[in-house]
View (cartoon, rainbow, N blue to C red):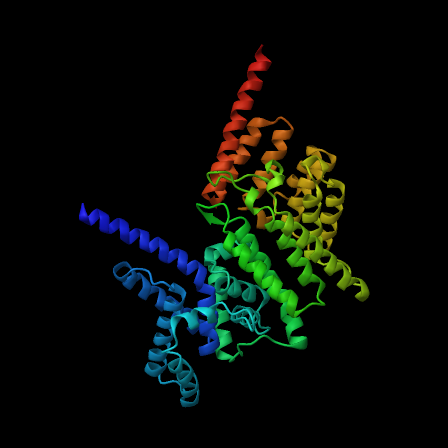
Length: 442
């Protein structure tokens, strides 16, 4: 009996450690990277601190300031490692003095440093990871790993590419940053503009992973949405004249306004058209629409056409402005998706355009486009393709075909909440098909 109680407590502490790690991981790596000037080493030191927590906290209990404890432990490991490997004397002396000088820093001061917004370590880490020496794919993957805390598998799913491909990108990216001695800093002028598009793409993908989690038992990971939005607002302050920065912030604000309405009492998913719009956060909607206006104001004097984030924000705004699903301006959305498809061609954009087409011109129009893109290699294991096709077939009364599509979608998703939703829809299709068959035999 005592053993069972001990095991239960240990399991609870491990769950608590996992929660702490999700919150503190990015800040911890960012703070360490500033000190040791090596992203790969910073990640290793953070992992060492996590291992120490897993070993010590079940016996000693979780400290009052777990983030500060992890940082202090990682710093001590950094000192040991620097000594053990006998790095170049100048670098050793410089970093060692900084680290040793902070050994006696009160935990509260370390904890406050982790939350510093001015000269944000996370922002420095993002721009470092998005350095031009790396390919665009490597920049995004590395920053998702370090800032968003996404696993290699989650990044692969976000990119619709094989997991080993992402793993190789991460290894090569960290090695390149170390070998070329990339400075840990927020670039200025032309350098910052050059890296801005990659940083925006990272924020976009981190937000999306939070909005609909790739895998696990939860439909959403709101903390990722909050972190992406926080960093987006910082970026908007750093680059106030960049239309796409404001556009991305607008998109995230409007999407985040729905978070409270996207799940039911038990955490089950609630799809967009079924949501109680009274639960949408009106303050976030107003902030998002204001950010979209700022983006337009920035673009107008420069004669810039709307970018991809501006178009997506405008699409989100169509939903936000509609008091009911029936009031949605689907014709405008078809046009916006068409413009987006021309600017940034993608089968995923086409899939979303098919949904808008189905509402504007009927389900047959949407199904025609879905079937046209069904053979795209990038969509082979994309669960939303059969999910959308199932929706359209339901509207056409083809319930048995729809059931098969929902079952296929359920087999492809890695999210347990989403799988349950899809299987529930498949069962509903089977009932409707049986009822229709009965009617035909009467």
